[in-house]
Image (tube, rainbow, N blue to C red; front, side, top):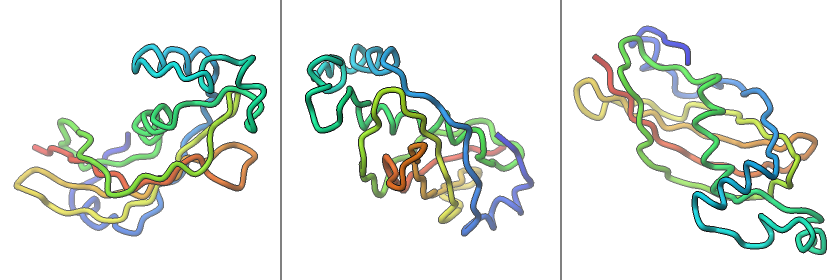
Length: 152
């Protein structure tokens, strides 16, 4: 994550932060997420049964894709100098538009929608995030996500 002066950070609304590197979603990652969440629906963990669905293979959990956004965004996100921590604050909108089939690669594309001081030393950043699937015109998800940055 890149740090910038607070005065510059305050004026980021409307700024495209760019895209992350591609990340492959393999069956092992999907299985580990299924174990962590106790969501073992066959469409995620049984390649033989999933092959007979319209998707033709297993698919990542939508929430697995969403959970990768902080990792992906860290590659292009900015924070004010003096930031001691950032926390997920919530979301205003999340839409899962297309499943991510096993073996696909995804990346995030992020634009800052707003920045405001919530309390002294606490900055709320709202970002529009699109998780793209390599080779697809339709993204896996779109979201408006909130991050709270604590600055000293």
